[in-house]
Length: 333
Ligand SMILES: NC(=O)c1ccc[n+]([C@@H]2O[C@H](COP(=O)([O-])OP(=O)(O)OC[C@H]3O[C@@H](n4cnc5c(N)ncnc54)[C@H](OP(=O)(O)O)[C@@H]3O)[C@@H](O)[C@H]2O)c1
Image 1 (spheres, rainbow, N blue to C red):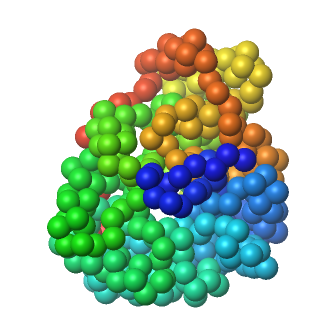
Image 2 (image 1 turned 120 degrees about the horizontal axis):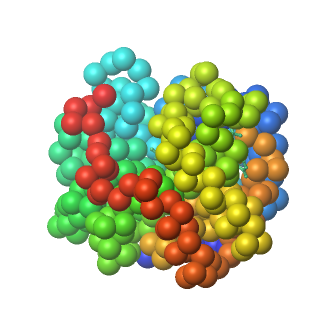
């Protein structure tokens, strides 16, 4: 495994992180979830990502149980706050009240006294940024969260947070967690240059586009049994955005390019995001241990410029680059 600094912070994360959205507490049974976590630890993965909202809190519980007995200092546990975890007016967003209460409940579900990275899952347009940053800073000072990050924030939102933290003497965000993969490159024009300049690391999600970049979904064919596209609880709805003829026809060209480089398609996809110097870690999901092993082998792989050009040519028609596509809800959900 390769370990990278999270931005310019002193914290090191495994270049491949393991995340449990859609899977733990939902698509897969607990023994499969535990097997994936053990496979991740075996592969040297030390960074685990979850959120208060995943599977209604069950994802944090399953992860907490799977990591039980693992020396706490040998792993980095990352969770998030923002999306609604109940119907009440203060059950979502980034108010001081919700941040404090949500972390309290996350720690209980995870069975730990602190998280390594606490992330604002989206930008909250209904709460002053000063209030949010002060609330995070208080948690850092109380030792409940060691570092603070954000997820899917626009460049100007990250910039404002850095400025306010400097002015108010508050802890500064160290990371952003955006969606980033060969098909979805919207962070490249604005978020990446700002974050490289400011030392904010990208810990990117869906590097394999939820499985689509493995080539397992083919135009006109039924999705493979047990895959996310067949998960009626939530996976099928989330992956459907990629399952159209145009995308599937383009990605059908990737397995041959991966083979030329001596990689599996999943490894090519993960190595591709890690090739970007702004990326501290790629958070992969997995439903079985073999997938974790496959993905983890992408750490340390170097991709040649010629291969990168061929990937761009193969996908040219289906790449999204517009930075305006990064958007948090205008009102708190
Ligand atoms: N901050 C946010 O808003 C946000 C949003 C989404 C995700 N995330 C984080 O990012 C993590 C990863 O997201 P993701 O699950 O969408 O990422 P992903 O790694 O792009 O997709 C993971 C899924 O692809 C399939 N897969 C993985 N490796 C494979 C392999 N080697 N061969 C074949 N299929 C493979 C598996 O699904 P099947 O086996 O079911 O096909 C797996 O569950 C999440 O768990 C979460 O921690 C964050």
